[in-house]
Image 1: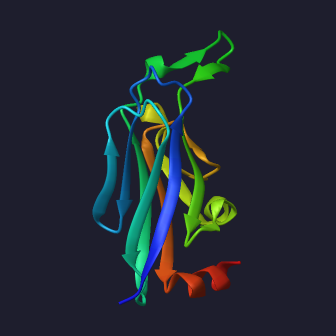
Image 2: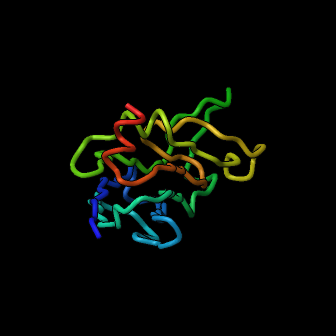
Length: 144
């Protein structure tokens, strides 16, 4: 059995706001923080044998009070979590994640369910999903 390593960094725009994050690899929770107050580096080793996989980043605990809006409805400040330095086998995959990952949310209950591209930050309770296959090098070659 061969293995590969996934890694990323998790950060926050406002350490005082209790935003939570879960990271799921297939159906296993590999990171669960109720209140992200500082940056975290996550490394997860997984089986690289042939197969389909799903990586999920889940934002939880976001409330309307964590966003300040002016009288015109424009956001003045917003607490968000950032996901950066996404890599497989120390190969930078941030661009691929932007290209392939989907961010699903409902504007914290104030709007319809929507799917958007993921650009590195999560500001609404929801899930960013990245589907990929292994062996990881073959997947990287197929999507680049």
